[in-house]
Image (cartoon, rainbow over all chains, first blue to last red; front, top):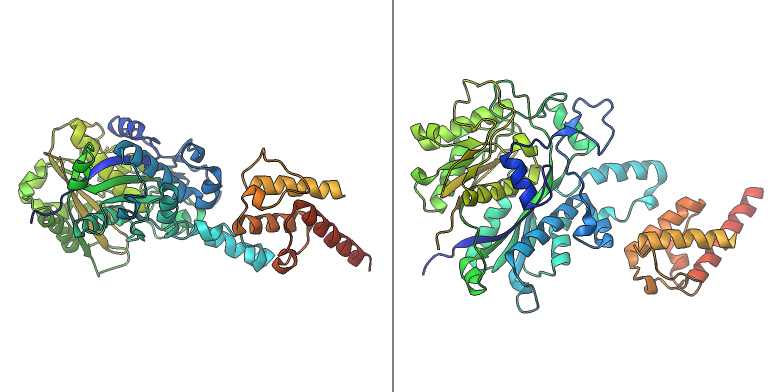
Length: 407
Length: 86
């Protein structure tokens, strides 16, 4: 029996550099930086004052206002991106297929809301807790709101492996479709973490770019990542299902590899990152010589970028120097649980358009980071297969191999 | 006072149910506004904040129309005021 191929037939994004696929892509290839002063809360007294916020987002364009109230910002992003992906896919959801269509989203929901409500309990009493918090804060409610909105009744779950979640959800959906659990899965990630608690806590452990310095992955003077927010959703389906309904195929999700460092809460290690990449290559049944572009995790922290560089060299040997490696996070900020998904979208757009997006804010080379990071300006490059890395704080690693679909 | 209560109830209810242009009178029911249990809790909390009263769920379990709700709040407020005079 031929193995089940899983393809992408629709994509949608809400991002700090644009709230449509077209705007996101034109921003990405023109080196647009979505990072700016935080407007979502008052940053007086905060050590970090910048983030990559989603701008001009109108949930009413994508869903009823009551749904928007109950969903909250994170799930609103996921619903909006799912609606765009659905539209592009041309999929018709009805009683005949809704139980074969699932939703898998990498997200942590909106834990910030718990901090606010704990304060209300303390100040006003338990009865004044906002009832909406129940439908807004939980990670599980993000895919639930998407499933409710689209009326899809197949597998519905959230995955969370920190910053690896966006790849994890796509890899998990890949496995689910291969196994026959579903014909179609809305897979991706969503995050809305430009919040006082997330910024304060992550700044406190030294992971965020200092002050108002933008994210500069692989640069000698990089000082950390910058929080972003948004969502990216992809319609994944079995090739057979896509063919049967005459869908346009955008790319193939060829393989996924997972590993866990089991070393430290905060410091990454090389061997397990290597293993995630190698497993993804094995899973895709592709020779590493066929990988022509790497979309890096590239957070802009001292440790990540140096360790990721060494891991890439360990996988690809001398050829590592010939493969363009770029980090979208210099432009989008770090979308947390959504970062892998939005980067998968970038990989697919790049493959279809023949362009590799740059790593911006790159000024001073670091001897420890000596690969070709496509500095500052996008590059024309036809490529047929790429690798996309996502590594979570805590030690979860997930890499994807994405291929041009050749029929 | 009754008019103020009715106006506030209208504002809060139509805001929570996201039906700014819906008809609203003493005969309007929660069902008419498609308000489910989560909407009702939001409306209660907003009213408690607005009027400085406690509205236990069991006391309003049988209330159906907005007119009945206005009367209930009015009664609560008069108890509160007489309490304040003690």
